Length: 187
Image (cartoon, rainbow, N blue to C red):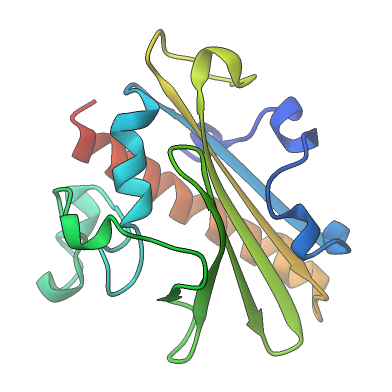
């Protein structure tokens, strides 16, 4: 399951929007990618509404049944969450006061979030590409979308912890999100 969210070598090596926000993040860079058998214009509305106190984190039904109903992600496109702009602050699951701020957004293509957790600066890019041209590992066909996520952190106090536990947690949650997104899109 975790290999299903592995970014290709080309994806990991390519510059991404937001890389400049945490330029010294060579310490920890987590790249994830997965393919959804739907065109980018069908995937984009789900990406835009994503987040805590918005549409939620898209886990599949088999996982969400263990989550209290009030904390489950929605299963439809909600027009109130389709407006996202630079400067918007989105609560995060990383703690009571944890948030992400939209740093830049390119409609139908990418959203870059930034955050500060103590001394650690964070950038998180969520980008969509036509899977046939994205250097994807698991291109599924015409009209498919490659979703690429890059998380950059610096400085990191306990590098070994971020690169082991943090990396595994990131891979697991992105795998859950990929499965939940595919389920919601009916693919």
